[in-house]
Amino acid sequence: MPVSSSSAHSCSCSAGARTTDSSADQGARRLARRHSIGRSPGEQPPGLRHVRGHALGYHTDPMAKTGFVSSIADQSEDFPGWYNDVVLKTEMASYSPVRGCMIIRPYGYAIWESMRDELDRHIKRTGHQNVYFPLFVPRSLLEKEAEHVEGFNPQVAWVTHAGGEELSEWLAIRPTSEAIIAEVVKDWIQSYRDLPLLMNLWNNVVRWELRTRLFLRTAEFLWQEAHTFHATEAGAAENVAIGLEAYRSVSEDWLAIPVVRGRKSRAETFPGADYSHAIEAMMRDKRALQAGTSHMLGQNFAKAADIQFLDVDNVRKHPYGTSWGFSTRMVGATIMAHGDESGLVLPPNAAPKQLVIVPIFRTEEDRTAVAAAIDALTATLDGVTTASGPLRYQVDWSDASPGFKYSHWELRGVPFRLEIGPRDVASGQGVLVRRVDRTKEPAPLAGLAAELPKRLADYQKALFQRALDFREANTHSVDTYDDFKATLEADGGFLMAPWCGDAACEKQINDETGATIRVIPFDSPDEAGKCLIDGRPSERRVLFAKAY
RNA sequence: CGGGGCGUAGCGCAACGGUAGCGCACGUGCUUUGGGAGCACGAGGUUGUGGGUUCGAAUCCCGCCGCCCCGACCA
Image (cartoon, rainbow, N blue to C red; front, side):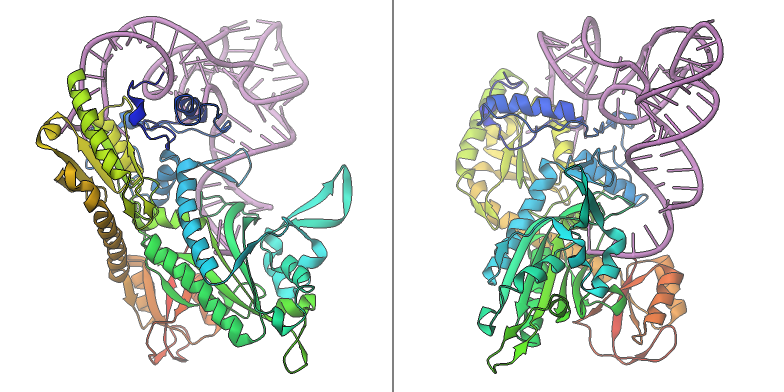
């Protein structure tokens, strides 16, 4: 039986309320135990062997200086270390026995599912249909589009043997699906009446990486790739914008991450595309992260695969293509855009748990009274609908101490915590604590259910605003290369600077400073200037930053 | 692919020629619970792998494998 005899209060959703340490085997055992008493008695926990566990190790520094979580690296001192600690200790993901690949654990996967589902709604609302294409791309197909091959070659993983024999033609494990899709749809597209063809794939892709950073850079990752074909370039251009808008909305409205929309420079354009649009976000270390890209493929792949359709004017033409992608990297963006010294700070829309209730009691009598108050409360919470669906809450009845639970859930970024103890029961209140600023206030239990949707919506807005303020405070306009270098060195952040459009100037800046052109923003005003490097005229400022 | 580091219990480490131990985590029990509780007992290891040296190897030597970090490329 469970550690807590009244486990009926416990939600069956988490891998365990008091998981702080975490070896996989232990996690699995805990899961097994919970499952044995939960809703699905027969269900076995997933096999999570070989996963590296990481002890929380809070005893190494029992008296933390400021925060309550002393076990993660200091965010301002060591951002990469902080990021790694957060991902591992929140049990979002772990390293795997496979080089360069990660295991996405339940808490991380839940966050991915949230953004995935929201993006899927956008994709379907705009008329795209989900499809599936093979994991393998025959070498001959991948090599049809010249720029495409050249761009992806270094990152492609090949299957050379199967069935005990060497294959007559190598198979690429898809780094992306343009090539195989173009080959297939040429049979589907005969007439302008077959266009536009609007498809989307949810799948995994492999791009061989030598450096691994959980969620940000792994050899295999999950994503969505939309592929569309249009009779006209204008139709395709419109779709490029539709994709980018879906990404903007998911980033800003769902994940509370403000983004800058713009066009990529030629050097940063997708291999095989005429142009690429992207959204860029600022992380809390002031570096940029690309949050989604949308490509105009023009007729490049259509010509390579010889896709033709008969237009209204009875002339055979190549259709125009687009493709756009959004990956699990955005889970990393969510961590890095909002997290603080105590761990994750999640936007309510994407948070696996929006509210955690922590019971506090000393005696059995108190426990009974607190349980009764919580039962009465949760009866009202079960009907609550938030901007992201039914309220997601959990009562933490595990037998860890209250202080332990506070730290545990703060590390995991749960937006609200409600503490209910004997004193609160007597007054019909609880103590409601906001994760983002840790403000505490008494909250009457009777009215809480009605208030929560607004409180969550306000929290969501506040997170977005905080991120936007941060970005604006760290965006600098510079006009000379000396100023550029000095500002980048001193403050980092986004640098808005004039650029003539020449790839050589772009490269020089990248080589000398490490900064790249993230985008040529759509929303910046036209502004005559002189290129940082060669002084030639520039029509508007472009966004430079060090990027992930 | 170049440079560096590391493989000992789930995690972090110690033992550095005489056959493996500590902390955390884990299990049981009792006492606890308003910011990471305490005590007691307990379970857990062919020391990454293959070979060599030696009376004896986690330890010394060689090969292999794996992982991490730093550089060039990417969502």
